[in-house]
Length: 173
Image (cartoon, rainbow, N blue to C red; front, top):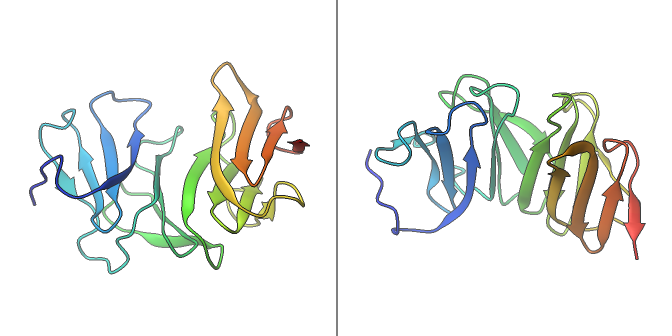
């Protein structure tokens, strides 16, 4: 498959923490594309799938062959083999999954910002998910402090802060 930047709409990009030449991009209706040569050539990772509305992407900060992508219908998909195969990882029922993050310190701690649904966390690698705060009813973005992974900021219908690695969040009113 070929890919020309500027055609279609790129909605998300994810960089590999271990290889500066490796990154993935996702399109609103174009699936996921991957480059290992800093964008000189591309391979498609999702041509065999019917759900191609990619709103968020993540190459795991712990394993460069583990990928996640968030859809427009509340689903997160996961690949543990570099995008060769995908499986449904979790289902938030509805909403665009706009951001997926894994703690740089602990691969079992993950977060997802889901538009019109909330900001979620799992402390057990995805087995159980819960809202980060009872007032979290929509989610847009979530980032770790690059100098201290215990500090997390999430945005949605409000701004939420954690200083304990995501165990608890307070609402900044």
